[in-house]
Each structure stands twice: as structure tokens, then as C-alpha cells.
View 1: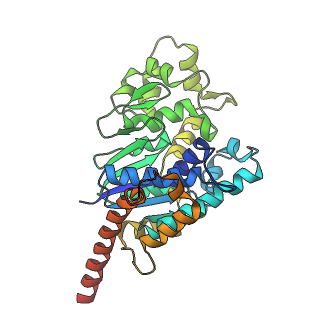
View 2 (view 1 turned 90 degrees about the vertical axis):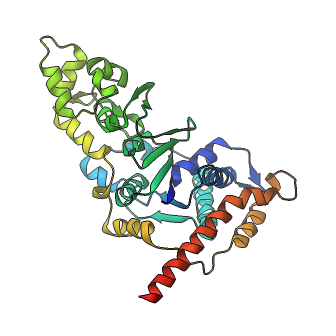
View 3 (view 1 turned 90 degrees about the horizontal axis):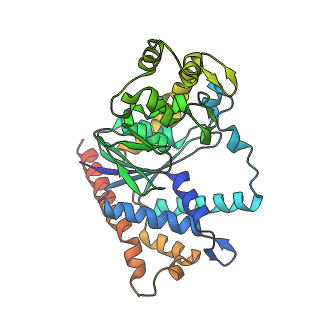
Length: 338
């Protein structure tokens, strides 16, 4: 069975971009670039990965969800970042993409589509043993028998049967979507129920920790109580900081927090299918091209001074390249026989 690494590209790049601020090659910041490649190599080697796919957020990637919820990620759109910072980030993103092409790492990026939904669709399409690499805890809802999620901010892998962390509490992955729908998600500007956080929701419905439940279960259990406290009343009435919106607010939250095909264009859906099945043509790809990029970007100057340090840095990608080349040859032979 293939062991696949699915990478939330923007998430990984931002980690190094903001976390390694003082790494430069001349006047160019390369912290995001260096951290991306180093982290990717580590996970490919550590987990004996046989296929790697990096998904990137496309242009206008929030479009579909904003049709349902106009305020979705509005807090990010209004952030005032310096022009130089934006240009540096996208320069490093384009450079990372050049490296990945040479190193047999598959990539998906489609206009109007978020990386999360492409990752979810990929998991839905295959039975490959899969590890998702991300900062986004929304993706914890994708954990299954075949799918594990590595949260970079806490350097921990979560798999089927584990309790996963949300706001200092631990619940089963199957309830992540429900909990976020009720409690909201400030990073995506999704308004939850007023006064209800994860801890208080668990106090109201303790079963959420270790039993899969749905919104109807939550509403029925609260409704059956003789006396309701303020938080419980807010859930029943759908009270957010925007006012009393009724239960439709929770149903809408559930809809936009869900991930997958419904938030992808036809082009993206076909593209994800292709990435799951197609083999990579080796023509034009060469690790030596990646080495030349490393020299140009000053990455070789950052590595330890030992003469073979660059070999250790690139070794996981060389193993991945051999696997992908063999896969291409087998497919080509099979197609010729047909």
C-alpha cells in the first residue's frame, strides 16, 4: 500500500515564513523556503513516504463559502500586511513550487478552491495510508482508519482512536465539526453561540468527548432539561454575538465547516483525481536542478559545513524520486501492452 503525505502548502510555508525571520540570502528572506523543504524532507524520511502531494490555496479560495456565509475569513481579508511582506511570501511560494517540480512532489492549486477541500477530496478518493501535514485543526475531522493528521504547532500525529485537542479540551475526531459549529472559529471569522466555548459545551453534553453525536442529539438533550442555564438557552435559540439567529445559524456553520467536493470546481475535482492516479513524467525533472536552486538561494550556505551535508538534506527526495520513476515506468509499460 502507498504511504502518502498530503501537505497544506500555505500552512507549512507560513510556519517558516513567520517563524524564521532572520534567515536571508543577500537581501532575500528565505526562512519560509528553507523550513518548507527541511520539514518536508523530515516527514518523507521519518514516515517512509512513497507519494507526496502539496495542495495550495487558490486565488479567491473563499468564494464558495462566502456565498453561504459572507463574513467567512473577512478578518483575514482586511488585515493590513506590508507590501514587502506579501511580495516576499509569494516569491518564496513560487520558489518552493519550482523545487517541488524537480523533486517529484505532486502539487494542486485551483482558483476558487481551498487546500483543505482538495485534501478532503483526495482522502475520499483513495484508500492509501495517508498523513496530513497542517496547522489547521479543522482537518482533524478527516481522521479515519486510513488517515492521520499531524498538527505542526504541537508536533504531534493524531490517528483513529485518539482524542484530539480543541481549545485545551480533548474530543474524538468525529465531533470536531460539530464542536466548531457550536463554538465558532475565530480564525475563519465563524461566529459560534454566545458564551459557549469547548469546555462549557462539554459540561453541557459530556458525551461529545468520546461518543459520536450530531446537532439533533445536542438540541434534544438540552430541550429535555427542566431548567436551562444561559448557555443552554443560547444554543436552543441560536444566539451569537450578532444576535438571535435561531437554529439555522448552527446548520449554516455545520455546512461551511464541512470539507470536500461541494466546495471544489469541476476543474479542481478532476485535478485531484488526476493527482491520485497519474504518474509523473520524469522528462525535465532532475535533482541536480534542485541542487542548482539550493546553490542560487544560499541554502547550501546554511547547512552544516560537512562536505556531504547537502546529500543528507536531499536524500529523502532522492528516494521519493526513485519510487515515482519506477511507478511511471510500470504505468508506461502497462499502457504499451494494452
